[in-house]
Image (cartoon, rainbow, N blue to C red; front, side, top):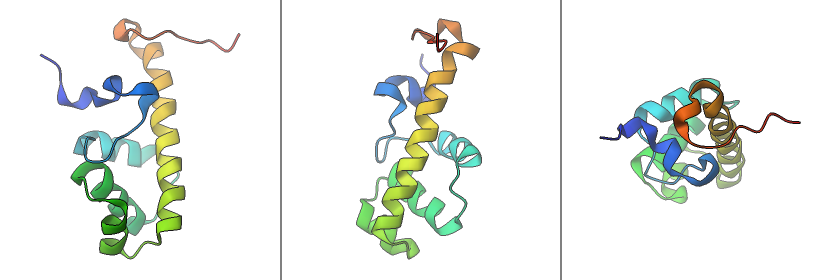
Length: 101
């Protein structure tokens, strides 16, 4: 049986989809992301975990849609980087390790 926290392995290149990110995974990514604003993090959570659309998530937390989009891109970049790191820690994960050669 697959664990719910392995959502990252189901998505192409580690892209996070609205409403499909488990809460625990979201908070782990938030810990290592360059996003520090509590309002923005809460808006990202509403969008990625709870499934609110972008405008609802921004409105609920007083975040401008433009700033939200930039923060989401940074958050996605963290997720993509983690995706590329997985094979170094779990070779059995099934995707190829590119060693920068």
